[in-house]
Image (cartoon, rainbow, N blue to C red; front, side, top):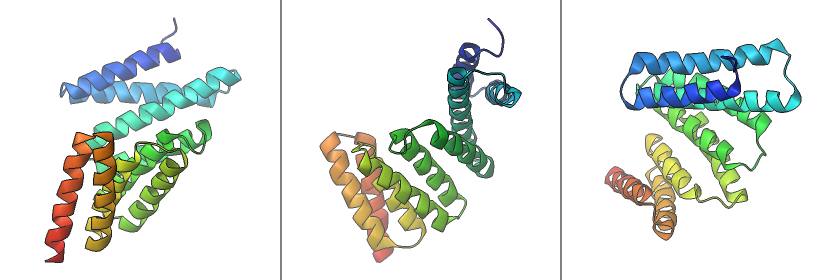
Length: 196
Protein backbone atom coordinates (compact mmCIF):
# COMPACT_ATOMS: atom_id res chain seq x y z
CA UNK A 1 0.00 0.00 0.00
CA UNK A 2 1.32 3.43 -0.93
CA UNK A 3 2.14 5.91 1.83
CA UNK A 4 -0.29 8.44 0.36
CA UNK A 5 -3.23 6.00 0.10
CA UNK A 6 -6.42 7.26 1.75
CA UNK A 7 -6.41 4.27 4.13
CA UNK A 8 -2.92 5.23 5.34
CA UNK A 9 -3.94 8.87 5.75
CA UNK A 10 -7.06 7.79 7.66
CA UNK A 11 -4.96 5.73 10.09
CA UNK A 12 -2.45 8.59 10.40
CA UNK A 13 -5.29 10.96 11.27
CA UNK A 14 -6.50 8.62 14.00
CA UNK A 15 -2.96 8.38 15.37
CA UNK A 16 -2.64 12.19 15.37
CA UNK A 17 -5.87 12.40 17.35
CA UNK A 18 -4.55 9.85 19.85
CA UNK A 19 -1.29 11.79 20.22
CA UNK A 20 -3.29 14.98 20.77
CA UNK A 21 -5.44 13.34 23.46
CA UNK A 22 -2.27 12.13 25.22
CA UNK A 23 -0.76 15.61 25.17
CA UNK A 24 1.97 14.68 22.68
CA UNK A 25 1.70 17.97 20.82
CA UNK A 26 4.69 17.57 18.49
CA UNK A 27 3.70 14.15 17.15
CA UNK A 28 0.05 15.20 16.87
CA UNK A 29 1.01 18.27 14.85
CA UNK A 30 3.27 16.22 12.57
CA UNK A 31 0.44 13.73 12.02
CA UNK A 32 -2.14 16.38 11.17
CA UNK A 33 0.25 18.16 8.82
CA UNK A 34 1.15 14.86 7.11
CA UNK A 35 -2.55 14.14 6.49
CA UNK A 36 -3.32 17.63 5.19
CA UNK A 37 -0.21 17.92 3.02
CA UNK A 38 -0.66 14.41 1.58
CA UNK A 39 -4.27 15.05 0.63
CA UNK A 40 -3.50 18.49 -0.83
CA UNK A 41 -0.71 17.00 -2.95
CA UNK A 42 -3.01 14.28 -4.27
CA UNK A 43 -5.74 16.81 -5.06
CA UNK A 44 -3.35 19.08 -6.95
CA UNK A 45 -1.92 16.15 -8.95
CA UNK A 46 -5.11 15.81 -11.00
CA UNK A 47 -4.65 12.06 -11.52
CA UNK A 48 -7.50 10.77 -9.34
CA UNK A 49 -10.64 9.09 -10.63
CA UNK A 50 -13.94 10.65 -9.59
CA UNK A 51 -14.74 8.43 -6.58
CA UNK A 52 -11.17 8.53 -5.26
CA UNK A 53 -11.12 12.31 -5.68
CA UNK A 54 -14.31 12.68 -3.63
CA UNK A 55 -12.93 10.44 -0.85
CA UNK A 56 -9.61 12.29 -0.93
CA UNK A 57 -11.35 15.65 -0.70
CA UNK A 58 -13.59 14.49 2.16
CA UNK A 59 -10.57 13.15 4.07
CA UNK A 60 -8.75 16.45 3.50
CA UNK A 61 -11.72 18.32 4.97
CA UNK A 62 -11.89 15.95 7.93
CA UNK A 63 -8.14 16.33 8.52
CA UNK A 64 -8.48 20.12 8.49
CA UNK A 65 -11.44 19.95 10.86
CA UNK A 66 -9.58 17.70 13.31
CA UNK A 67 -6.47 19.88 13.12
CA UNK A 68 -8.55 23.00 13.76
CA UNK A 69 -9.97 21.37 16.91
CA UNK A 70 -6.42 20.58 18.02
CA UNK A 71 -5.41 24.20 17.39
CA UNK A 72 -8.49 25.44 19.22
CA UNK A 73 -7.66 23.31 22.26
CA UNK A 74 -4.22 24.98 22.30
CA UNK A 75 -5.84 28.44 21.97
CA UNK A 76 -4.44 29.08 18.48
CA UNK A 77 -7.68 30.75 17.46
CA UNK A 78 -6.54 32.51 14.28
CA UNK A 79 -5.01 29.32 12.87
CA UNK A 80 -8.06 27.30 13.93
CA UNK A 81 -10.30 29.79 12.10
CA UNK A 82 -8.26 29.36 8.91
CA UNK A 83 -8.41 25.56 8.93
CA UNK A 84 -12.10 25.51 9.91
CA UNK A 85 -12.91 27.87 7.04
CA UNK A 86 -11.08 25.57 4.63
CA UNK A 87 -12.80 22.48 6.09
CA UNK A 88 -16.18 24.18 5.67
CA UNK A 89 -15.41 25.10 2.05
CA UNK A 90 -14.56 21.46 1.32
CA UNK A 91 -17.60 20.16 3.20
CA UNK A 92 -19.88 22.41 1.15
CA UNK A 93 -18.58 20.79 -2.02
CA UNK A 94 -18.87 17.23 -0.64
CA UNK A 95 -22.04 17.16 1.47
CA UNK A 96 -25.70 17.96 0.83
CA UNK A 97 -26.68 21.48 1.92
CA UNK A 98 -28.79 20.02 4.77
CA UNK A 99 -26.08 17.73 6.15
CA UNK A 100 -25.57 18.10 9.90
CA UNK A 101 -21.80 18.02 9.35
CA UNK A 102 -22.17 21.45 7.74
CA UNK A 103 -24.16 22.67 10.74
CA UNK A 104 -21.43 21.42 13.09
CA UNK A 105 -18.70 23.15 11.08
CA UNK A 106 -20.64 26.44 10.93
CA UNK A 107 -21.13 26.19 14.69
CA UNK A 108 -17.45 25.51 15.35
CA UNK A 109 -16.49 28.41 13.11
CA UNK A 110 -18.97 30.65 14.93
CA UNK A 111 -17.40 29.73 18.27
CA UNK A 112 -13.90 30.50 17.00
CA UNK A 113 -15.00 33.81 15.50
CA UNK A 114 -16.67 34.70 18.80
CA UNK A 115 -13.42 33.96 20.66
CA UNK A 116 -11.63 36.26 18.23
CA UNK A 117 -14.15 39.04 18.90
CA UNK A 118 -15.72 38.72 15.44
CA UNK A 119 -19.21 38.62 16.90
CA UNK A 120 -21.16 39.68 13.81
CA UNK A 121 -19.54 36.93 11.73
CA UNK A 122 -20.07 34.49 14.61
CA UNK A 123 -23.75 35.37 14.73
CA UNK A 124 -24.12 34.87 10.98
CA UNK A 125 -22.40 31.47 11.11
CA UNK A 126 -24.40 30.15 14.06
CA UNK A 127 -27.68 31.25 12.44
CA UNK A 128 -26.69 29.38 9.27
CA UNK A 129 -25.93 26.32 11.41
CA UNK A 130 -29.35 26.58 13.08
CA UNK A 131 -31.11 26.89 9.71
CA UNK A 132 -29.41 23.69 8.53
CA UNK A 133 -30.26 21.86 11.76
CA UNK A 134 -33.91 22.89 11.57
CA UNK A 135 -34.22 21.81 7.92
CA UNK A 136 -32.68 18.43 8.71
CA UNK A 137 -34.59 18.00 12.00
CA UNK A 138 -31.31 17.35 13.79
CA UNK A 139 -30.77 16.87 17.52
CA UNK A 140 -27.74 19.17 17.20
CA UNK A 141 -30.21 22.06 17.46
CA UNK A 142 -29.94 22.06 21.28
CA UNK A 143 -26.18 22.58 21.10
CA UNK A 144 -26.57 25.30 18.48
CA UNK A 145 -29.09 27.27 20.55
CA UNK A 146 -26.69 27.09 23.48
CA UNK A 147 -23.83 28.31 21.29
CA UNK A 148 -26.02 31.12 19.95
CA UNK A 149 -26.90 32.08 23.52
CA UNK A 150 -23.21 32.31 24.40
CA UNK A 151 -22.52 34.43 21.32
CA UNK A 152 -25.35 36.74 22.36
CA UNK A 153 -23.73 37.00 25.81
CA UNK A 154 -20.46 38.02 24.15
CA UNK A 155 -22.38 40.70 22.25
CA UNK A 156 -23.97 41.97 25.50
CA UNK A 157 -27.45 40.82 24.44
CA UNK A 158 -28.69 39.26 27.67
CA UNK A 159 -32.36 38.98 26.62
CA UNK A 160 -31.53 37.13 23.38
CA UNK A 161 -29.02 34.94 25.23
CA UNK A 162 -31.68 34.03 27.77
CA UNK A 163 -34.16 33.14 25.02
CA UNK A 164 -31.74 30.90 23.12
CA UNK A 165 -30.35 29.20 26.22
CA UNK A 166 -33.88 28.52 27.50
CA UNK A 167 -34.65 26.89 24.13
CA UNK A 168 -31.40 24.91 24.37
CA UNK A 169 -32.29 23.77 27.89
CA UNK A 170 -35.77 22.64 26.81
CA UNK A 171 -34.39 20.66 23.85
CA UNK A 172 -31.49 19.23 25.88
CA UNK A 173 -33.82 17.99 28.63
CA UNK A 174 -36.05 16.35 26.03
CA UNK A 175 -33.01 14.62 24.49
CA UNK A 176 -31.28 14.01 27.86
CA UNK A 177 -28.08 15.84 26.82
CA UNK A 178 -26.48 16.33 30.22
CA UNK A 179 -23.57 18.45 28.99
CA UNK A 180 -25.85 20.80 27.06
CA UNK A 181 -28.17 21.05 30.07
CA UNK A 182 -25.20 22.21 32.18
CA UNK A 183 -24.03 24.67 29.51
CA UNK A 184 -27.53 26.07 29.00
CA UNK A 185 -28.00 26.57 32.75
CA UNK A 186 -24.64 28.36 32.94
CA UNK A 187 -25.63 30.57 30.01
CA UNK A 188 -28.96 31.39 31.68
CA UNK A 189 -27.15 32.28 34.92
CA UNK A 190 -24.76 34.60 33.05
CA UNK A 191 -27.65 36.23 31.19
CA UNK A 192 -29.47 36.80 34.49
CA UNK A 193 -26.31 38.28 36.05
CA UNK A 194 -25.87 40.55 33.02
CA UNK A 195 -29.40 41.93 33.54
CA UNK A 196 -28.65 42.97 37.14
